[in-house]
Amino acid sequence: MRTARIESLVTPAELAQRHPVTADVAAHVSASRRRIEKILNGEDRRLLVIIGPCSIHDTDAALEYARRCRACASATSRSWRS
Image 1 (cartoon, rainbow, N blue to C red):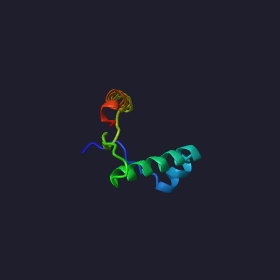
Image 2: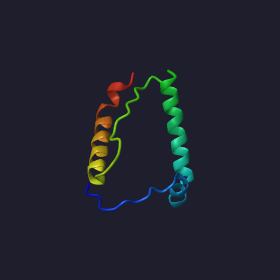
Image 3: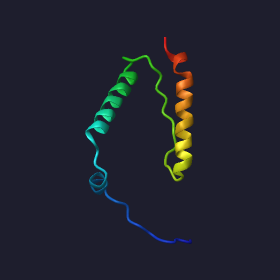
Image 4: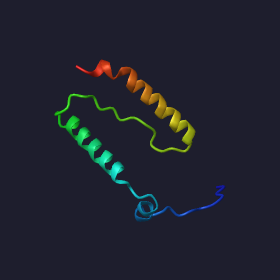
């Protein structure tokens, strides 16, 4: 094994303290969760697709992937509407 270093992970409390959630972000998360809940409960006919990497090691590649996903969503959004 070639371990260069070992670092402890920050606790959730430390992470929340270092990166506090703004009111706008909290509102966006709450609204998004409500929309997803309505889709899952059949109250909203939209298609919910969950995609993405499990983790991000290369931020440049992750941003490129996000751009491609956004472009695909924009290109196909009308075809899913009734």
